[in-house]
Length: 475
Length: 95
Image 1 (cartoon, rainbow over the protein chains, first blue to last red):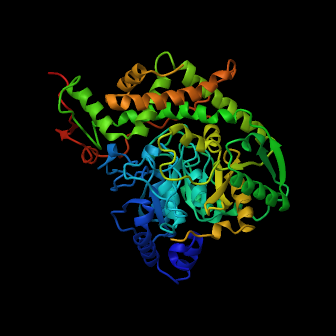
Image 2: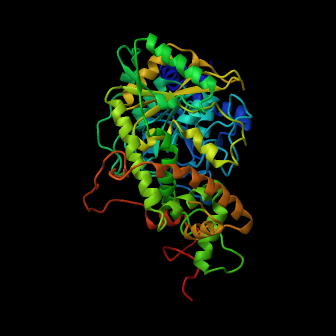
Image 3: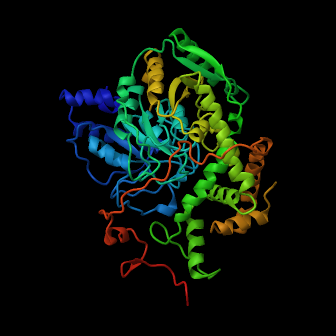
């Protein structure tokens, strides 16, 4: 195998034993990007500075376009941030650099992470390596596609309602959304501050544990970061699920779930049962309200977070030809109208509506209360289960253009992933099969807060007993 | 409840977004669809339920009030669209 095809742990073994240099490994991945990215379009720009190859873990990594990296342009795939060069490193970027990670470049996303298909980017869509007519999922579509196409050894993404897990599922790789507060959000350009988490997208579960070791931990600069000790996640890679209790929500296997996805997830359940896990039916009666709750809470927070993009300080500034109100307000409006794409405008307006006088109680406050009900359901389920298993997404990757004109149908592709964000708990997506059409299928495991280890253990056991993670797309 | 063209104009103005006439219909339609979808939340009884603003309970986080190194004026203004005399410059506000 060429270095670009390897997992991080396999590559690190080769580097440590002197069979390949960190610089050559990096060069090999760059050649792969040159060879295939014209078709995938995962990268929006390559790193401007040559990395230092002398660190302890020189793994070539791709970063989502919403993670601030000193000296690099960071745009959230939006025209409004074009030309913004971050004057500082995000907490996770600092940690990646400290570990010796070698940054390849910046990868595509839905504008401001608003989307589930990577189509709302100002750079145009990224394509699914398994079928170039399909979307890679989103919003971390560039992160997932780059790893699946061997254009990066691993990648970082962010997940507000499923933006790591759904693209991981669509691209046949592993994606973890850590517990809220586990990983510092300092330097992550905010979408919905009470839901956003940064996490790894990797080729296997072992790499997921390794990358979690690098990025986890308390950071004073993120006041929602939680000061609890970080375990060595690689110790959770145990091939044994005997006696573990896995909950299956009866609400998860209902209408809208694709038959092939359902079959693959049920097969996975049978396998876990054979391997000694105890399967229990649980009820999460309020999860059918999760998407509606999310689109109130997340857009309300987004409308507030995105108020800072007004042309005053950095990024785009536009002024209209004719005076409409006054010079300053005209500049705000022209900048925001020219800078944001339609989906960003839609979500800002929806969030503004939910927070506006007269509607706050009916929408935002009610949304936060339903959020409590959804969280309570999960708390109840975890009294009797070690983790909860569902599909990651109700379908496999859909066609480019299929859902872009119907935002609601796009939102519904996050139906299984949103509850974990609302409850702040960790959740992972791992490959569990392929459709007849050759597209990857993923399953999701949700765990108790700060129990990423349980998710890694069950995922690792499943992976050790299945071939899915070894499959590669034909490019 | 439904969203009208007037509502969209009002909300757009609050959000400092200029929606041109030819886009108004499209935004009204999609926003009305989403608002109609979230109406399902009205079915639930939430009378005695406390709102969750953060899933993981965290209190106010304080730090000692001491001066530490941060971005210099020059570094901060290096990304400015327009700067003058050490400040960000904006269009004239008061005549």
